[in-house]
Image (cartoon, rainbow, N blue to C red; front, side, top):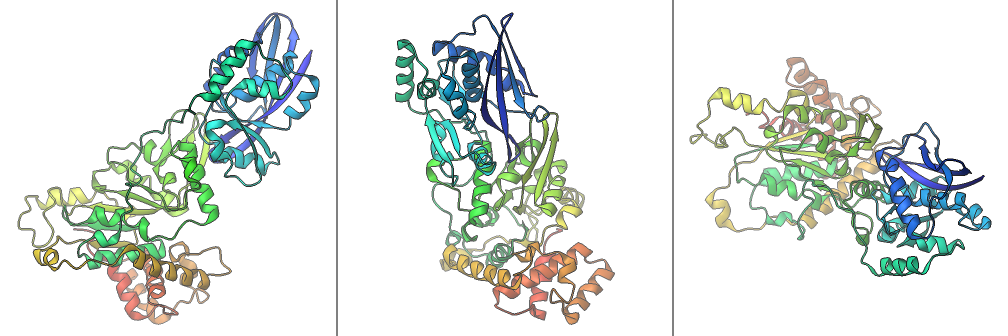
Length: 526
């Protein structure tokens, strides 16, 4: 009887858990039993491990193998257990020297095995390595194709392998000549890549710049305010007015991600298979632009087994842009309400529950009516009043109540094009946005918030939050008339503070409150 142990990592959302892989070999009827709540991908690893070990010169033989994944009550998912399973089986079978078993038990192994023993990459290597290091395991073995990603984690000692035979030889085992040739061939092959799932576009090769936008001074100002305070934005206007151009340029005026946010965002993209490790950590705010035919699982997250992150999580600390927003199913749009408030999303599936961060800026773009020609005088519009109401009612009141800025984007005129005057560049606007954010952070020092959009209304309405009775009076009157909800009052106050930060005021003045009310209520319900 022999027992060997190795370590693996399983992910539940972005949280990783160390798993003890224990292999026990005993005489008896040949068999292989895998216990410890493995999913289908791990259960199928038996055949992959069997083929890989056969290539390395080790067969099952006349022994019964039992492999336990501990803790046994934690669901295990993914193909990244293959490497740890194979080494544990080798140790239990006596194919490795006894002195190697102790060192194997202190190393975490992440990787999928091919039938020839080659080690293939898996998704989520960055959060898995980060979780292992936080749990006190610094030595980690990963596929060679994932080495760049794994080495982004400080404090991790990474060993990259192409083939299982490299570890067998490293631990003092012997390989037949044929296995050595196969191993050398695997080392010469270009590394395989994780195939990324289909998703919203993340941007073009050339960085978009606000200088490309002609005219639209009002919409540009709304975009700057949204960037400075982290506010959600709705733009309503006819086709061709520039709504999509403006939204695509919002990330260009946002500050770079903080280091902690960069690690979280990169981990989310690694888990989704959308991360290029050679480019390093993602330091620019991400942007996701799903099509209106995207499913609820694609946008919110989900799928069979353990839930995968959706666009709301992939847009964490960045922008989620829904073009033609009324064309999205109402059920999908209403699912955005909870992450908009909480900044995270919890998804329950048969395979378990996953919590993902989802603190994004929502940007909605909509036409004023189904035909899109109701803007301005609306002379070319062929839609009835019922059709207009039905079209825009797809954006529910509770959802719109969470959108701070609602602005009309008018069609461009010939004089706008003839002027030819370029607008401000993204760099110039980004400098003002950064200065406003720094003023907000200094004002909110000692609190858990850093942006005006993060401050709860109870704090804004209190003396500690700098509430001014002369400013609160018109807001309370609007609340009594039903023009604003209590959430609307709070969001107007947040906008007023952002406008004050942009104008370098110590506190909001009456013009800031008037501008905030205009940004909150203009053009949202055509």
